[in-house]
Length: 400
Ligand SMILES: N=CN[C@@H](CCC(=O)O)C(=O)O
Ligand SMILES: [Zn+2]
Image (cartoon, rainbow, N blue to C red):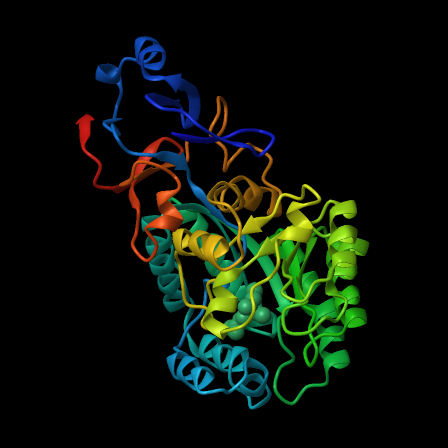
């Protein structure tokens, strides 16, 4: 069993068992000790995980999992040398997904998200952050956040909502003028409905400047939304510094972050969220985790699921974090669990496995957590418990 403790250290225990009572972990420890106190024969459900690793459920802290339409042709064009920014400047990329989302009816949006959540759950994700940002107008941004809320109500995976009206500048609009709309119209409407917890912005050359991003994040803060920043993804613009200055929960991507950025983020307690799937699908250089890891930062690893980075799989993100970014299997696994929870301000111990934390865990069809990145490209997750309930799986149920 791979247990992530409160400090973020990963410890493995041989011959261990976990008992979950009323949705929370009641005991983790040697099998004899746990089973003598919690008799498997009296449990509602008992799983035989002999020879299998048990890990905390994954916390995917950065996704754009709610969208409509398909951009597979753009993926193919990028392989032939077209850049992400060129596609966006031509009205493709995010703007194309915006057109598809505006045309979709709310039930179809919800159905799309529920399907994505099913897939994520099958790969071991038990908590996920989902951003809006394919509406770019008040009505569609609210429709997206409404779908996120309904999905959270209906699906076993916990879904955390982020408002991202500043995801792209709508076609035909001026960036400053659009920031005015986000600040004066969209944010107040989102806050009034209470449908988002975070406010994110794409601080990037050709998208939102540092000053425009700051305006959005400060206004979000006034409405009670915690800032997050898409920072230093394609160029070095200053988004990481901004994240530090506004006290963001996280700064994400960071492919072009400098050592000084890392220092500022760590000093400000901002969680760095690294998204190796994005670099993989763009054929870009990976972010460097070392300036963060060397400073003891809780580096999070997430999928960035979106039509430009089409992967629901946290095990694959973990494999890329190891092979592409040089993180150890333990660092990547902690990044995909406990540190992901920190990036979305969840301080209930989710992403760890210890007494009192939510009963969110995965049984792997593998003998250790190292097999998650080692046996890449397959799904190592055999069963998933969410709040102690078996919500996915094929592990042998010995009782229940
Ligand atoms: N970079 C900005 N936003 C997304 C991509 C969204 C899209 O291309 O649809 C990201 O985090 O990778
Ligand atoms: Zn993103």
